Length: 93
Image 1: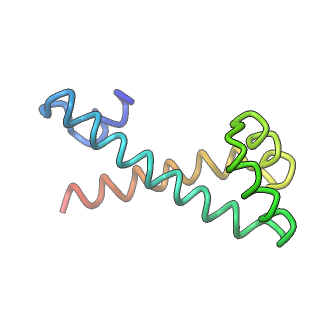
Image 2: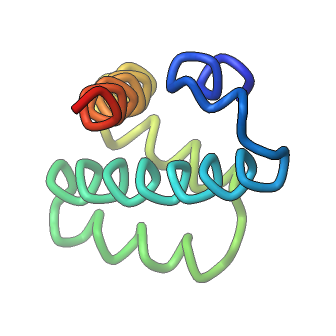
């Protein structure tokens, strides 16, 4: 988290403001990851995904995604990195 705050130049904000921004960014990244995941799943996979989300079992969901989405961990990392780059570009405008 501190790396993101530093990369985006948010060090001068209060801890609460920093936390609020990081929370919003995390939510946005999760939405992007979910979108990417759903693009890679079959209709049956999407149904299973939604059932696992409702079940609220993070470990089971992660295991499912790793087994169904090719290069899942790399996709998650790439999505987060792309988001941070976009945020840096927007903040430098």
